[in-house]
Length: 246
Image (cartoon, rainbow, N blue to C red):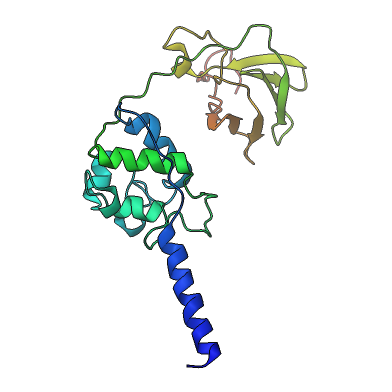
């Protein structure tokens, strides 16, 4: 065997040895159960769920709940070293997860995260997703009145201004206030009064080309407001009779 062949075999063997070594795993000294929702799921959200969720499930693997993980057949409860989920995350077996090249900015799990994942599997890979706590929305302070957005209808008749979480509609020729737009859905909880359009600041406003539709944008929310068509006034039919000249 020549020197070149020997060197190639050595490098190949070394690379296999380096891969089998895997990532470092911390040592955890605790007796309390690992909580899937509070300790495991946040790790998956940061590094795994972009590709393994209910909508997008690469390799038919979903990591959103313990039930999903069990159905994917990637965990042997009580045996992390026989579980593909841990082996891939610890870079002990292919496919290495998350991949080094990925579009989600996912990173390899650190020693503490791997230790938690390993212990969770050792404890049976159990858990549940508890109901999310209801968000308690609070109205904006009354003194908050900045204007972050404005728009003018294509015909120049109306101007709208987003002041805090309200939308003011002005008649341009007369320079007078016409109305404030109110979202009826916000009045149901009793926290908001008439004239409130969004929960948060109105950051953008835009009319459509015909001027009968207005779009308003807040944080992660866009609302469409349609102007009611102008109704013709009630007409009276006057007959031609005595004393009336047609």
